Image 1 (cartoon, rainbow, N blue to C red):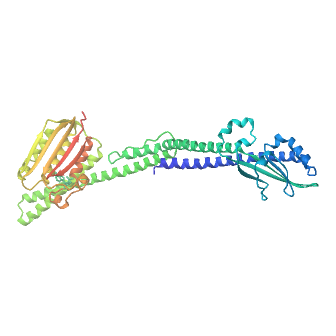
Image 2: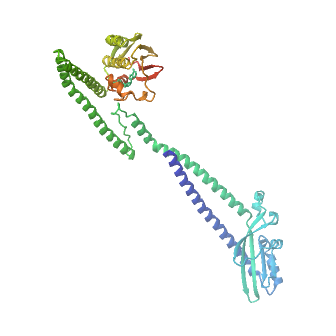
Image 3: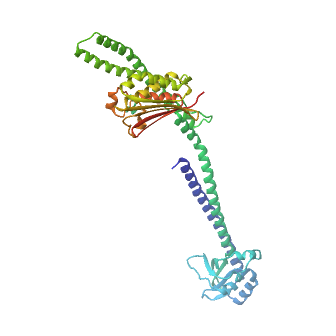
Amino acid sequence: MRIRTKFTLWISLVSLSTAILASLIVYIELLEEPYKMIDRELYDVVGTALNAVDLSHPAETGRRLQKLDYHINRYWFKITDKNGKTVFSSSLARLFDIPRRTDKGKYFFRQKISPAQLWIDPGDIDELDEVTDDAVKFRVVTVSRDTPAGAYEVMIAKPLLFFDMELQELRFRLGWGICGTVVLVFLASYFLAGRILRPISTINHHIRLIREHSLNRRIPLGDSRDELQVLSTSLNMMFDRLQFSFTQQKEFIGNAAHELKSPLTILMLGHEEMLAANPPEMVRQELEKQLNTMRRLSRLVRDLLDISRLEQGESCHRQPVRLDQIVDQVVEDYHELLQARRIAVDVETATVSLMGDPEQLLRLMINLIDNAIKYNLAVNGRIVVRTEKIKGQTVLTVANTGQPIPAVDLPRIFDQFYRVEKSRSQVYGGSGLGLTIVKRIVELHGGNITAASDNGWTSFTVVLPDMS
Ligand code: ADP
């Protein structure tokens, strides 16, 4: 899961929990206060009513309470004596009975009753339509009294018709509030996570641009002095160290090859001189064997020097070049070898000019033609070389008959020292660096090279952009 999604989900979850908790606290607090007020109201009414009660004169009690009629009839109100005989009951108490609970002095009771039978505050009449539940909740309070005239008990209950409705409304609003908050927090945290993580994407983008041939690129440091800037600085320092050791390694290969070149040339010259002096047959054979090995070694040293030069020089010296002329020159140079191997060459060159490094392009052509001859068929071999301009780009194709390159090897043939068939390549004196050099030259010219091998033909296609 992406960090941005994780971050958003976590923040949303935390905000959802916080909103639920806060709403619960508010709800419970809000719920307690009105009940306390209702209870106080009920005790007040009971207090007023009890002042009117005189058990020794029940008739007088009834009369006095009737005077409080308007007040009393808002409630379910009942006074019973110690024998359970009703001394007084309000009109609502005559409609239904509320069972007495001995375990609690205050409790709730539900009764199915039409709102029309209840006393409704004139200000609340309009809201009556919204009452849907026909069971009304009552808050019940009981009070017992012992007087010299005897013990009696008062039960009073207040219908909570609109109170329930308001609670429901409150729950509804809190619910919507929570949902709204979570949606808002979700969107805000998604946006914020994107903003916070954007520098990481930028760092990632710049790291991806640092490749083998662009080791000098670095992550730009922004103005914000935060942890990501520290990370970028550390990464840049690491790239500095890597580039240093990489360059040192390349220089070492170049220097080593350079050091080998002169002694090898001297050795070869010495062997050639010994051969020229007509040595005995056995010695001649041995000298020729050694000379061949030295030639192979010399090619390897030359390739290593070339690679090292190409790797260190990050650009090429461009000038107007006729690629078709380079092709003709190389084919001409290989004329004898082609004849000896009886390989037919089709050169289909249109006049192609481009801005390039003539020496490097010559090397590229030599390597491709050299391979096309080396890996061609033993008999009836063919080579096709084509240069053309397609959509302003220079396209060079070198194709040859011969044993195909297996599909698994194709993507790797441009790697250093990679040879498809080690024994076969060694017979031809290959080092596995020829195509690496070709690819590097193509890259220095800003182009690309692809290889294909099927139906008995292997072809290399070089595309060079127009740099003029
Ligand atoms: P080498 O010096 O061994 O020729 P290269 O880098 O030039 O190394 O080529 C890598 C491998 O690709 C070779 O070992 C060979 O098997 C294969 N290859 C290159 N060019 C051709 C070609 N024209 N036809 C067939 N195989 C080729």
